Image (tube, rainbow, N blue to C red; front, side, top):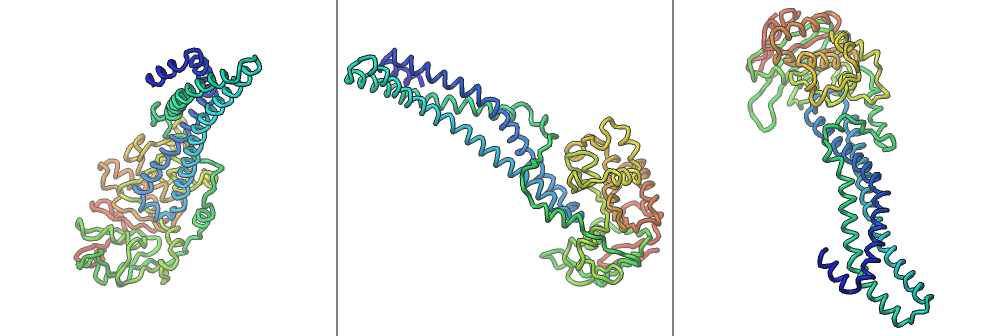
Length: 420
């Protein structure tokens, strides 16, 4: 830039000063107009960009719960809205960033034309005007690119300023763009699915299963019967296949042989309806970085959430009094992976989520194994209150967790045997 200025002054000091002053005036005008626009676009870009990674992270971390809850469309739609918003923000940035260059060049050309006309009107010889115009063109050719680069840097600073003002301040912002079209029909079809009615029993019949690319059978013609309205405990050593039983019931694994029946009907033929009537409480609780309301009404758009159902589920999980005591109530943000609440509270939110749809079947996959004894006892007290009202399948390491179960199965050596 310094070399360009030296060359420009050599071409003509007076002309250089005039051109530089004109370009500075134009740059200041552009920055006065563009800075707030670019800063706003930068804030939007940051929100959408953070949202993209947020929904990717949550979709990967919660893939099992998402599939069980049949909420793939919700997460895809939220990611798509962030993606569309991000693309739109980048396009606006590119447009705003390119416009000043065209304006500066237009002003430079218009300035030379006006200069030539004024000189001719003042009676200056055409040959002298051409000489001056040539000098002016040389100076403009050297200063205009410098002005464009300065403008690009200034607009970029305005645009990216929000990124350097603390990303965490914007993680809770509303990133939903109401004007972005998304696949609402797929989402609507999934939340409107009717529950599969179950009156008698659930059966795992003649189950044969091995993990892909292995020869060892996890289950070798295993059977299990779960009467409706009763509590069933499943025990076994680590690696015996207790959690695999749950994954089979939920239809997450492809069997080599066997049936999963509800009142004699193959549930995999009515998969969405089956999952609609199952609540799942895992060991590793998945929480989205949102409010208590959104974590209980998991995978539901704001307009479809019934707060009456949310409070009812929280009451069943014995968490309603705690939530009512919070200043923001259901609108309280729990942070990434529920970092702002305790382990016991996260587990109770998980229970409330499982009960939100009022399912017939409730599956607990070692849901209390990571808790201390006192917290586990309190959680199991909440679960035991559901005895007789829900069909419960409880996977457990500790025998005291299943002491109130009506039926207990042991998983061992590829077989499932009833102990009581």
